Amino acid sequence: MDYVDKVKNYVSEKVAEMEKPEATVMDVDVKNISIDSISYHAKVSVTNPYHVPIPIMEIAYVVKCGGSIVATGTIPDPGSLKAKSTTLVDVPAKVPHSAILSLVRDIAADWDIDYTLELGFIIDLPVFGNFTIPLTYSGEYKLPTLSDLWRGDGEEEKEKKEEKEEKEKKEEK
Image (cartoon, rainbow, N blue to C red; front, top):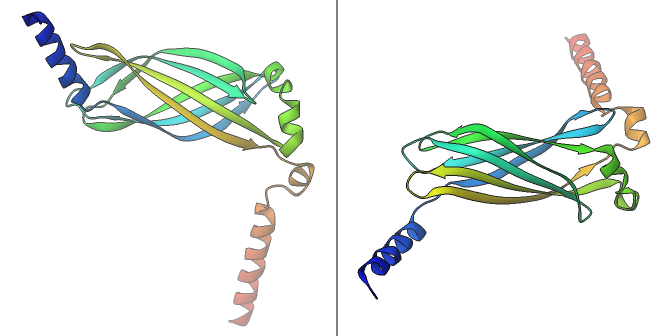
């Protein structure tokens, strides 16, 4: 083995041992429902172990529902990761209604949409170049039933009950 190969092996071992940025999906919410699509927003917490900010070059995403890919895309230049800190990144994804309509079997079975969100944070690490932080998150979005829509979310009933209790307490005094 020559000297160049020894150096490559040494550097490869050190890179493998280095701390790398890590990401975790904190939450996925429906932000907007329009005529043509549903907008989901994933809140992702990304930890940067380095003493310098790291630019995020791009975020690639794939949304799967019922095993089918319903949306893909990229978000170019979403900002930077703060040095030696955790950064919350908002990842929007638009899913067209035509893709949602193909999920009728899944929705009919349990009245929810099971989904998987695959993310790839592509960051630029000095000396090493582009590095991808892969992340997969699965969840379900419960659809409102007709009784939920009729009753509301129960907040009105809770408020009326609290008001009634307050009136009773005042009358006792």
